[in-house]
Length: 311
Image (cartoon, rainbow, N blue to C red; front, side, top):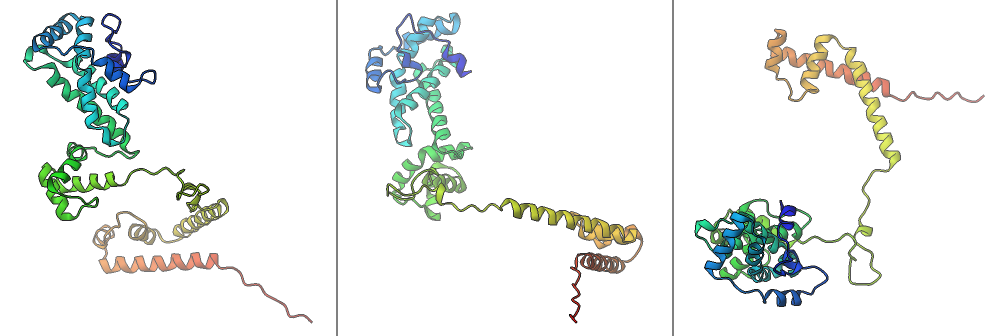
C-alpha cells in the first residue's frame, strides 16, 4: 500500500519538492523547510474543491496542491516528537507518508477539513516509526502501552514526579491520570529507562577498553563434554529400555504409568484398570522400581581388578 502511495502523485506539474515523500541527503532540512514555506495555505473552500477533484477525477494537480499546502503541518508535528531519539528528517519522512495515506482515504463530503483528518494519519505514522526504532525489543504492543509511551513525560510533569524510577504510588497516580492499567505504566516506564546497549560499546571511557562482548564469559559446554553427555544419556536410555522389557508386563505398565508418564496415572485409576486395590498398585510400583534400579546398577558397576601377589 505504501509503495503504491509513493508512486501515485507525480511532482512535475506543481513542483512539489522531491522531499515531499521524505527528506533525502541531497537537500538540507533547513532548505527543505524553507522551500515548503512557499506553498500557500488553502482555505476551506479550496481544500474541498481540490479534494473533490482528486476523489472523483484523480486529478494529480489538485492532489499535489492539497499535499503541498500541508507539508508544513507535517514538519510542525514532527518537531513535537524530536526528543524521542530519531532524526527530525526521519520523522518528517514518516509524517509525509501519513499525509499520503490521508489523501487516499479522505472523503470531502463528510464535512471535515483535510488538515484535521490528515493530522491523525501523520501522527499515526510517526508513532509507528518511533516505536519500531526505539528498541530492538518491541516496546508498545497495545493501545494503552502506546498511550503511556507518548504521554509518560507529560503525565509526570503534570503530577510533579521527577524520579526516573517510579514507586508503586507514583505508578498508580500516572495510571489514573492516563486512564490505563498500572501494569502498562510499570512495563513501559521500565522499558523506557533501559535503552539498548551495543555489545561493541567499550566497557568504560578508556580508549583501550575492551567492548562488552569481549568481556562476556562463554558458558557453552565444549564439544568433548557435550559428546560425552550425549553418549551417557544414550547409554542410560538403552539400559532403561532393556531392563524395563525384562519386567513382568503388569509390573512394567504400572511402573511406566506411575514413574515415566506425564501426567502421572493415579493409584485409583490403575486399581480399577487391573482390578486390584490401590495399596497393591503401590506395592507393585515399588517392587518394579527397586528391581529396575538394582538391575541397572549391577550392569553399570565397574569390575574390580584382581591383583595377584608377586612371588
